[in-house]
Image 1 (cartoon, helix red, strand yellow):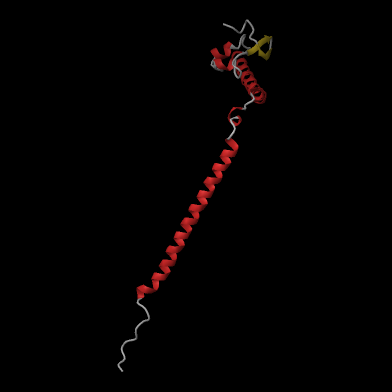
Image 2: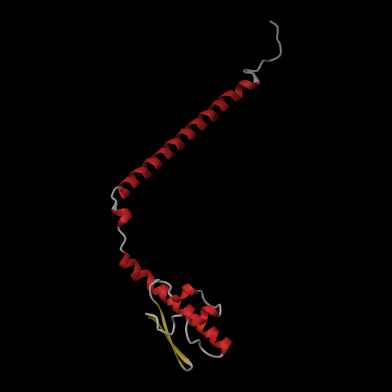
Length: 146
């Protein structure tokens, strides 16, 4: 009997094939699992949207009175503070309060829209009394109108 070099049980490339096949199978399973998860999420989102948006009341029930009562008081107070600050700056610059709020816009301290913001319909009633002033939200005085 002749003895030759010992032969390996398998060629070197054959041992890596099963490991590569296992990695490829794992990748396919992971890919399909993620695809199924995404489909379930989209289906859940569609069901949720249908249940929440099936009535048109979702789009049209807006109580403007409640909205006005909620938002306008802070807007008016902010605008009042802005007007009072402009009045104080004007008095520091000119050593007196203006005779009308329009002088604040002429001096460049306010925009013309600041005199009727936030409601757009009523202006601020302003009156001077010596070294003091009165500022109320209401109809404009005849002195304030040009």
